[in-house]
Length: 109
Image 1 (tube, rainbow, N blue to C red):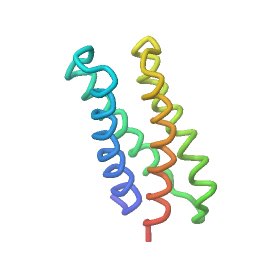
Image 2 (image 1 turned 30 degrees about the horizontal axis):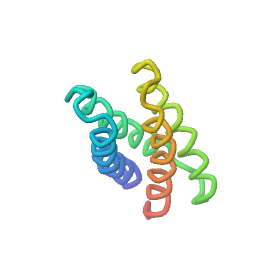
Image 3 (image 1 turned 180 degrees about the vertical axis):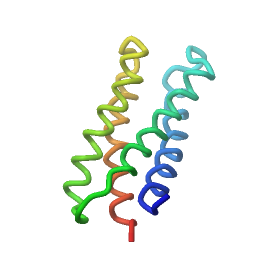
Image 4 (image 1 turned 120 degrees about the horizontal axis):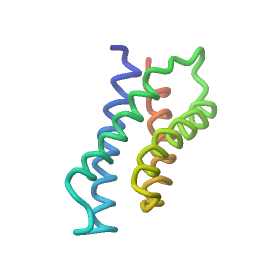
């Protein structure tokens, strides 16, 4: 594995924990452990998708756009699977995609 991939997956896993906390605060007892795991895993997959892309040059602005698009696509899969009930989680996925690609691009030395 290259450094970019490791950074992206770890960042996705950490942000996934924040997603779990946010969902618990918003929905409480309405969510199952399986849904929480699926949300966390969605962020890890997002990190994987972002980490597998190898940019030709380090452009932070371009990486943030790319991260947002990948975050949108990956988050939409979970959002649509839940009958579109977690709009804040979907929006967070776009933002998390931007954050993941930013860190992966900035710290891939």
